[in-house]
Image 1 (cartoon, helix red, strand yellow):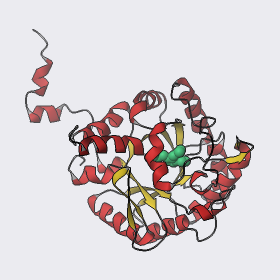
Image 2 (image 1 turned 180 degrees about the horizontal axis):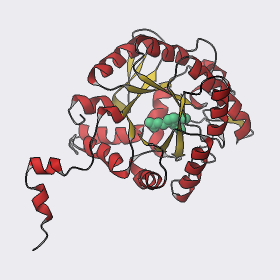
Image 3 (image 1 turned 180 degrees about the vertical axis):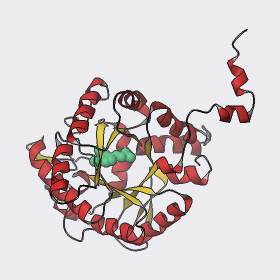
Length: 323
Ligand code: PBG
């Protein structure tokens, strides 16, 4: 035999020498859930090891992550039902929980990168990412709400704004609005190819944000499509996005690969709540070893993602799976 590929696997040194992809803490983003109150740290039942934090506990958690070298955080608020309305006004009201959280994190840890989520669902009495009128999700009027939300995030110190709503034209709309208001250096991480996925279940449990009626299929993408993701990516590029995100991650590795082959913006993968729950459940049952976690994270790198949003971020560093 002339070719024996096993020669390159014969020792740890050689295996390491030829290793193509690596996991680094610098590429991980840790999503964190926020609740009102003080000294609160409440576990999400469908996401063991993941908590909802009141602002004081959030600061402690972020401090411990920073010590480990985990420096980027994506914040999501759990909003009380009584504060929700049709137009998600709680999302940009001065002094609201989420805005206070952004401000507190940036004030205490200016070196941390704060990513904020722009979408109406956690604040909407309809549980949708846009304004609902007669069962329809209105696109253009929703942009105005998203704009108010994004400006409020920028004013309170957000480093990167991540619109997760899937309304048409929102990247261009938000880019101009931010620029007109002097926030030219606030970045936009677009949820470019966000699919109408059943993998978001545990996240909606965590925030109590499930749609009250219907589903999200008129704005989130059909899981059966890949070429449509290229249209979304083309538009986001033209409209001024700084990152293209694919979500969920694991079931859509082909989409990550396809965008990373064609577009020169950094690609982010969102390893969502259901993907986390699935591995944790199987590990808890003893059906899978924990090694599925680093293996899964590496798959995003192989597919071409630079940044990985994952609930495994902290444990991956603690366990030494990430350097
Ligand atoms: C809402 C939003 C969702 C997630 C992030 N932003 C859920 C949804 O669209 O219903 C899901 C994240 C996860 O499952 O981890 N705009």
